[in-house]
Length: 261
Image (tube, rainbow, N blue to C red; front, side, top):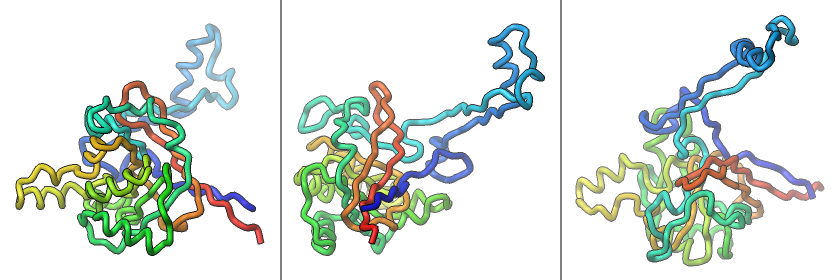
């Protein structure tokens, strides 16, 4: 068997409409020449010309929120409680066994932008791919948003997972899910229209809020899901350990075991 690694993450970068304007990341790049004065300050008598090619180190200074780039949301992001009233866990408390498990891909690219996926649609897709969910399966959702990443319409593209669809997964032992969209829920611009018509606050963030009933995590801003099979791969998505935080960045990877013949 040969092992193939598929990067299902997006980079943290500037100049891309990856988030609403107020949340966009900012990166300052310091190159090998700009940092020389810092290096020589550690070693009295050292001169720039003493260094190979007159270079010191390179590094980057970032201004980020924990929800930039591909990231794992903890239950604490969704609400202060989970599992019907228990304290919601933060990203540094997420069980590691949730973050490395068999993957299942639901292909919802055919659904229109703003559509809220139902439990029946999840069940139908599982029937189509011939998979019965197992506890701790990591379920990733391939939407139209994946191919829109980097475009100005990214934040408005793709379907979202509704409350009943999310609970359908959680009630069967799933504890970690993911999407290639900006949000696990339908894009806000579409939800705002539905709210304006119904004035029902239950429509807002309904997939996220399912975590109040059953605690879970999800990954947002996945990428490359269209190249994955429906099953037969493992997802690795350990988050950066940030104390008491609502999320942590992750280099999500799909690992596929393939026959070498």
